[in-house]
Length: 240
Image (cartoon, rainbow, N blue to C red; front, side, top):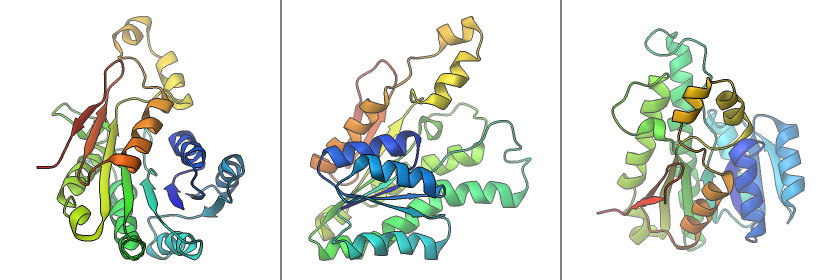
């Protein structure tokens, strides 16, 4: 039994499908219930959909409880996140707005990781894969500093929790992709000038990200971080 947050669309739907093909039933959590239901139906294997705003502790707990009631969770994929271009970003955004971004992109994965730890330990172990972003890498300026800071935090969270592997059998890992070839990215790329498009690295096929997630779930060590860049082989960094 697996949990995928933000599983109703985009990469979350792709990961949900990949987990189902690997034999997992999935609790698909999303703020859009209809989208979550569509993903769960497509996945099959007794997968279920839940409307949940994982920034809210009680709703996050409800997602975990649903997996526990079905014999899990053996896997958690912290996928939900993102930011919207065009609006005000830190330091010009209202505090409530940038705090909400931190809550979605960093606090919620921390909360869900905490909530699944004891159920996974009782099951003999489990795997947690958090989806980071290249926005959290490097030193260049970025359009949403709060999003970049949150995604950088996910990497350090992952490495900080590497000891849970030996102590409790719970492996916390992170996949850090650059721009993924989903519909939104393809639309944004098409709107660029020909020169800008030519200078943009290849988009990462969603299937490549799913493959890394599944590989981490299957064989990854706690604290492992895998970076994915368009047109390159994945870069794997192990703890220690």
